Image 1 (tube, one colour):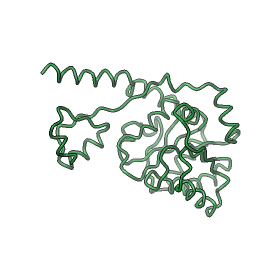
Image 2 (cartoon, helix red, strand yellow):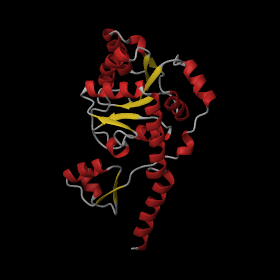
Image 3 (cartoon, rainbow, N blue to C red):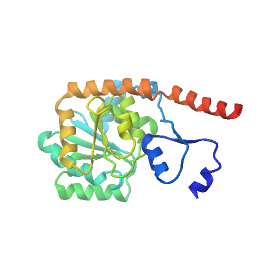
Image 4 (cartoon, one colour):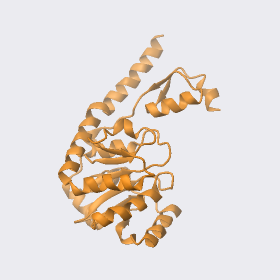
Length: 244
């Protein structure tokens, strides 16, 4: 059905090179890559808001790893718990801040955490709105995006980097097109818990390095994923179509 309708499209955009390749593998041609962007100025969070958020969720004096979005196995919910077991061995005050709906899968995560002996290392916020999630990014030390599935262009990576946070993200899909490995964060195979936990431990153990990665990430978003630039590029494509 998708292929049928796309035959009538004047122009086809993919949000990442990874998605373009996947479309081409399925016989969908003439695809142009158009990464999405964000307005970095919208991700500036005051220190007062960070303190209030941290006090609300008991994050003060903790090393915070944020795992946010839809909570399910494909997004790496199980693997991030396995990773936390290893992280806590080296960083005893590490906390996994889980920002997502308190649904059946959240309860599954809680039960698994209890069985692993790390239930006191998880903090669930429940679903939070677009303004509060920005504060969650700012309150975290690093952001983890361990998707096991093909994640075409995980926006959480862009948003975290816009907040100046290093990201340890999945190698599947478009995340490696955003993250500069070893510069703004790391992209890893999330099935390899040893490597993923090692990268997280590396950043939590080296705050100066994490801060440097965060600054580099914010700069990259401003230069390469600027929302205004992306809007102008799309408008230019429409103008070209209208003039033909």
